[in-house]
Length: 459
Image 1 (tube, rainbow, N blue to C red):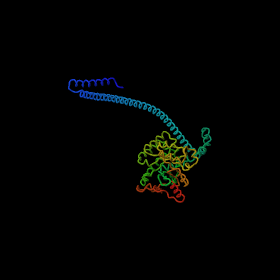
Image 2: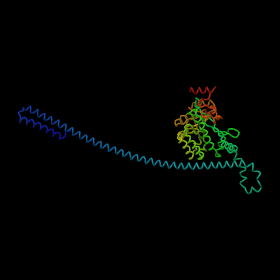
Image 3: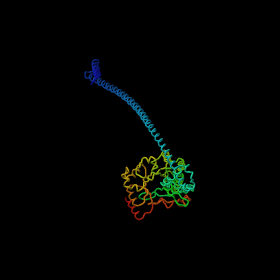
Image 4: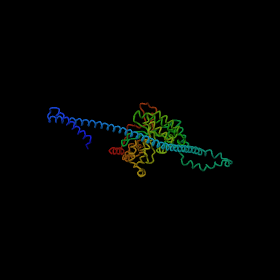
């Protein structure tokens, strides 16, 4: 709608131009037509001048509005920034409160684990004392009958009581408390007769050696080898397992260096007992040696029983974390069921899991576990864990395992544990020789084994 000021200005411009034309006609000798042309020209000039003046005035108004809008946007940005700062402060307060509650829960859990660890230590001490008493009871019959006078029974009332209980206490586990085994263990430690046997871990289906596992054997005075399953229970009961594991770790480092002279990608599995992991003194010596050899940490895989990682106490968890911080990887064996938590194991540094082939091929495990055995390899692979099928004894098991997408295998079918050659300990650094195992060549197959391998390769 046209404003009144605009109409007034238009009327004024018409009056001014008309007055100019009349004045020119009256005062000069111009004709009416010429005076009208001059008046019209003056009106046109006034109209143009007014239009330009209004445009400039509108532009200045728009500039002012844009400036006001810019100031408003700046104020809004400051308010948004202030709101973001307050929101961040509120989130930090909530996070600190949640972390404080988490820390309280963690401290309570740590204290509970500490108490459980202390109870475990007391139980181990009780077991050791019971074992010592049983050793004493076993040695009593040789000297017991002669010094049994008539007047002693009234004084020693408790002495007759253990006599009938003695056979029952010694019968459940005679091997663990056998004095000859303990004598053999102590003499092997003192005589440095702790030997290392090597068993290859091969790729499937190519059967090319990829890793080695160090198997511990003790030599008695007659040169006979004692298997780990025969001496470990007695050594743990007598508190000697830490010394044996320290000697084994040193030997494994020596063997690993010689293997890498021939093949720089060679890796070695070294077993450690739960008793060593929970003993601060024995583990401290082992950790010092492993710290000094951190350059070989990626190639030395420390292996524990599955039950050890399931029942970790506070001390064992700290020691395992100390090994992981130094770059060492872990493996677990002696798996008895397929209830495996890959995320938890991966967080602890586990990179290999050994499962018996009979357990993987057991049809009952499909219903007893949450996942089918054929899918375990893929599940573990998502968390960076390799599955190794161990205790493979026949070709049929290999053919069945190929359907489970298992990449590695171990067992007597490929090679049994073999000792180091006698000259390997004193051989020069240029030609390390370790048994008859050749890390770069797979075992030669004939007959049914070759047919099974070809079938696996085609598949």
